[in-house]
Image (cartoon, rainbow, N blue to C red; front, side, top):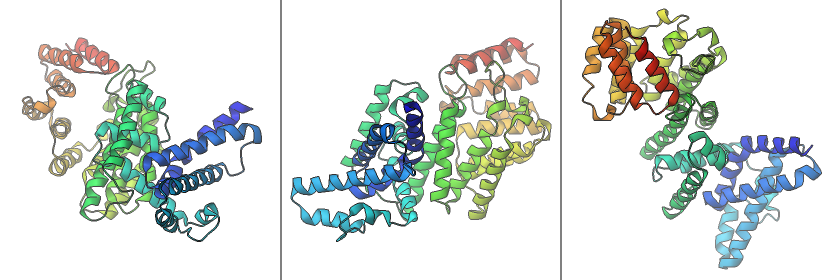
Length: 422
């Protein structure tokens, strides 16, 4: 009985914790305090629901309880600071001034306010004042509803490390006086880029883990997808939000085909495309269409999604439009230049114009400091050399790539490629 109730609580919390925390944060104007008050509501559910049963509307119960905690917090602050005008301003900002029941007043708020609050929370958790690692951890905690233990397990780091990151992140936000608001004007583009980067990083770590024994960590992919879909709902006019969501949906569609029965990596051109998820592909293509309608001049994520769409639209690997992919990588190199983009463009050119053409482009990247420890550079070079019949050189490159790989599955895969070259 209690296990079923606890499972219900966990499910509702995962779905609703971000909305609850966001709404309370607007009340108390402090993300750290808001999370504590939301957690108090969760503890209250764990205490009452096993004995009283799950409420008819569990999400509303949690929200109402958190709101009452927020009211108590404001009242205590008034008593401690003896600043009546401060508490009056807080209540008035909530539309609750002169209303005896604070919670009833809040319940009359428009549903749109919840979306606005979520957007404020997203921009606060991903504020550039925080390090990338801190932004990722705080976002998964506040917006994903993940426990510290779950985040630590997903990234293969000690739980204490994640806990410290989250505590420091909340302290940094408070000390920097980061306002709980959606940025406007020129600041919006910069801050939105920070938000999208966090979701992108979470997905990529799940899609191809940088370390550990598993090539993929599906839980992180799922969480990034959920965050991406949430962003698309609360920021529907931002083209790059839809571009990122399109990319994630299409990439996630390949998950079942990316490993074999033994969990070993299967490269894109060798995947069984009948195992690709048609629903996710359709969702991704729809999101890409929305991005294109909003911004005819594509941004980085929209271009990456367009590349993924080329693969998704090809029923067989030989049907892939590699010329178009090479062209899109060229456009991406103009919008977001990087050695990794250049390497991917070289692969596309090799698929379209032959391995010799691709090798020329890859060799031009050998002196790049950014790629010095990037195992896919020697891996790609090894593949091109193997296609050109230069077996000894190819084996050396695959072995060098394996030595650089941090993921055990990738390391094994690359060593097997080295052994298979003749």
